[in-house]
Length: 194
Image 1 (spheres, one colour):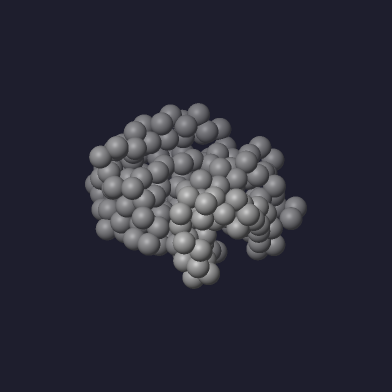
Image 2 (cartoon, one colour; image 1 turned 90 degrees about the vertical axis):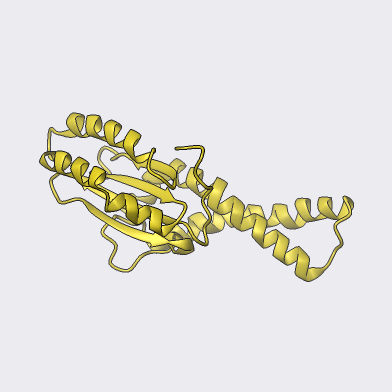
């Protein structure tokens, strides 16, 4: 990731989720290609984050690459670039299916996109995972963070407390908790046995 690029703003940023199904016996070649394209992608203007979810043996068969950009314009500039097109041409012999992707801008990346080509967890797992992250955070906000801020001189008012607590909670969920939490439980989250 280029440190000169703007931080991800969930209200204006954009995310692309790319899914690649690899031909049998071509995983080593794909991994070599992935390493090469990673360095080029991470140098793209406006890139904020780049992650790979590798297949889990016996659970999934696809690689999922997630790229977050500071703006939708920057994302489309990379996705439509000649550099990316050249990399996709070189990887085609390793792919069992065409390059598949979907783009989401703003906060809608958190929600199940209509007609998404990438594999998504079932809704009850999304619910349990989100609830299990929000519940302790909301308790911490009301029982620890807000009382501490009031002791430090922040005036106590229902509206400002609600605004501050919800802003802190959403920031923690988007930037800290969910990226790590979903990686930690990805085997369960994407298990086809439900």
